[in-house]
Image (cartoon, rainbow, N blue to C red):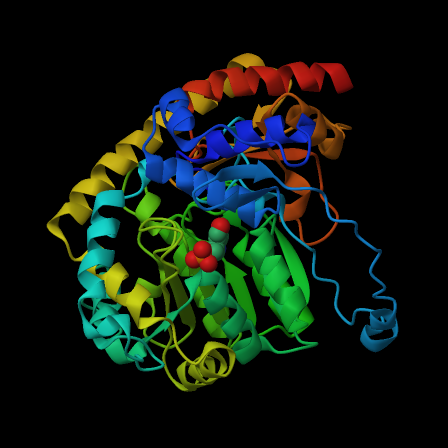
Length: 469
Ligand SMILES: Cc1ncc(COP(=O)(O)O)c(C=O)c1O
């Protein structure tokens, strides 16, 4: 989230500036320190934000003043219409899930955990340690820091049975988040104009990445138990697709976790069709009960390309993930990664490696999972109580989301804006469907800030639903 302790000061001063005369003097730093009970540094930070917003000017030694509005003349960017032409691909502009989190709302929309769920102390000390090493300035290899490649490979190897030969560090490519890895995979393994089988509903970012790569989506239905392998087999045969993108572990949004039997059946199907399974293992750190083994741990034939991210579990600022792939597919993905990014910042890789190799990492994972399980149960109970006409498709065994089916005919966009007007941010389900949505849904994320307000948030969603139906 974007908030820090300077945010309330910025918000309050913005309200004040809105009605103040140009040139009016802002309260002194000392007054603001006293009023908000914060340090002078926090006040300075708030003032810098207001200067950056063009609302305030500071005169050293004198004070800060409301800036007179600039007389603006309208820009003429009309020439760009001819230069750009009509868009060749329709990539949705932004998902609701990326809307910034304000501190004064109840937020169920975001996909990234609140900072209270992050190993913040480990991350801060890792940054401090990293700053004293070569990683702060050096260029890492394109495939990633060798020690980090080894860590990712070892994590996967630890779940691989002895009968399957485990991947090694040389199979790992470090990428900027699973999103970056997915984009590289779609370019390398599918390509523009070619088909990709995808679950429906599925992660909106995969739909965006496919649009960006010009890949043609072939959806198959998927629910709380995952896809039907017979439908997958038919669809691969009918479409000629050679790749299937899926999230076998705690799918976003449905929460589905594939059974071992389903994992075996899907693997057999992709093998039979000479196809790839692009396994987006985004939530392996968020397993809340039982053991979740990636499908990649069952495959040594190069059919499964495994994406594992640390962005959500270490920190959203540390965009580090890994693609593990074998054979020529590995080379093609690496070529795409080099062409797009050359390499991932060695500084971020060093921080990620430091965090996940600290003894405190495992302890953090355990307590974070307990906290997430409590939040999930709290939210699920609130849905049961305050959204009686909606249907919770399943209580997931992991991940960060509840997937709620709304009564037929609900206008999810209207519900979303009605909730926003009451200070509750939700994500309408439509964004998770690669084709027309088959019903109205909400995705409620339980990793946002202030779980103490969850019940009230759901009550307000229920009140809004009553108003619009
Ligand atoms: C299913 C899924 N895959 C990939 C991503 C992107 O992950 P990253 O932040 O590592 O790019 C997300 C983020 O919400 C996600 O939900």
